[in-house]
Length: 214
Ligand code: ADP
Ligand code: ZN
Image (cartoon, rainbow, N blue to C red; front, side, top):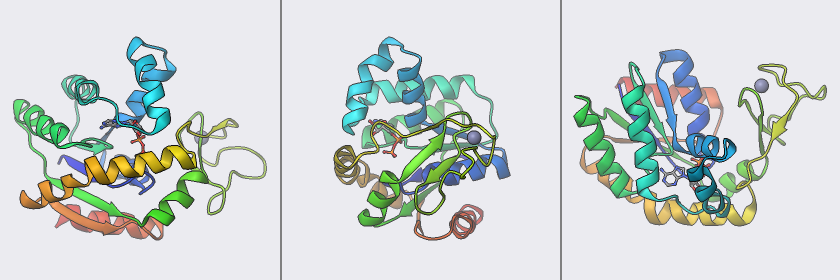
């Protein structure tokens, strides 16, 4: 089964994707993670996108479609979770073509719906473990007092360069302008369903599962 998790920054796509990976053995393809990896390893492309990402703007369709194409061609999986991709109509068309070339198709698109005020709160409070990627939140899930990650014991935590109020404003604008039209696109294809992304992670997980298994 191949699915898209759709939703604004901070909606919880990454969190739900990690759960699906663990519980269903699917493979998460996050273009945000791929781009951050490229930036950290200092490739030419990574240098090119760093500034665009920090500002909260979208990287070009060519770059992200290229990243996804390469991953799809080199990864064996019994199902992909697309997280942060597609973000434009052009990317959505490209994804359909890539899957078709592989003799596969998209099965479901789950939109995680969260109001802007909650997104801003979540994102400006967010940090992650530098070793395993476990996500923390200053208010709801603070880093333990002993400074060790609950998942791996690591002691380095990072905040994303684009998790600040100004860049977030741009990311939200880009989402409503460029990405939210995908809701109608997939609705017309009868693939779209919506889940309330505000609440307990376990409840949201159950709601996502209900849509996927319907
Ligand atoms: P979030 O959803 O929290 O904003 P991501 O980790 O998915 O963050 O993406 C971070 C940044 O990477 C985006 O703001 C954008 O600059 C770039 N990016 C990620 N995926 C795409 C994409 N599919 N198309 C264009 N840019 C992307
Ligand atoms: Zn960790």
